[in-house]
Image (cartoon, rainbow, N blue to C red):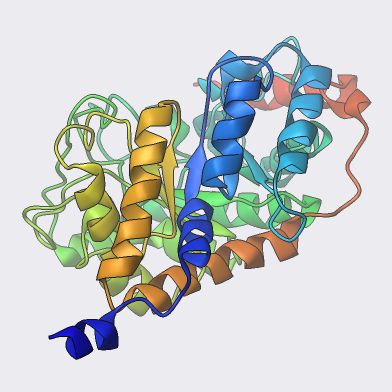
Length: 369
């Protein structure tokens, strides 16, 4: 039995398993600066990403300084990727009067001709403040008017129109130097439940998913999108028990195989009600890893971040497939670093500039109902 255990045991050192576990984490926190306790926590778990929210923001200069400080605490060969949810409209972590009042995706979709300009302006503001990754655009199709969470965050209720804007947005944002993230795969648009509160369900057959939900994601992938974020949503036609984030039947089959995507995959926030309390950190790690999720988001609670980190260290000790899976995830994270870190950043004076404000107001006016 001992020979058998040795044969299937981990082939990496404990230090390497800890390093790879940390790299598969994206973490958020409370406060406007880095306390000694928070600094120790981040050094100990070694995440690949830090995520800022409105609770971390005072003004653009403070955001830039905080991002620079966070960036510098990580090893030089694996600097932190700084991320934010900045879509425009009701999902914007840094708002007017600091950033331009970027309108919702629905407004941008109705205005038609300004998609690239909006994506470029928003990206340059974030780059000036020290961000590398934006969890945008929303690639969900606004197909359910009762949806409490997507709605005007989507470019359109028509799949082809939504796809056109998603592709244009991704290309413009990434040409400016910021990594884009198409979310929430395979589609959150036809839900009537907010996944922050409960577990939604999309009762569509696979053919319908291909004809509607997958269309904008296919275009995002064709456009070279840096990352895709999962949906904490059940799709019974594909998996009756597990949401997309945790399903080995959805991401590997649809995203990796059918759509041919080998890029970075983020989970949605694992503190959301659709997932939290339903599955333990150990279960989340095993299921999400089998589902080919690369980076697990834990956006506030340090205790969950530690639990996920420790579960990933153990997972590498117990699963003979872990070397390949964790190695692939780290490779994808490094590829985003290679593509989007180390560029010259725009000056802070671009944040909320008159030109961007004028553009944002014009698009809001043209895209109004």
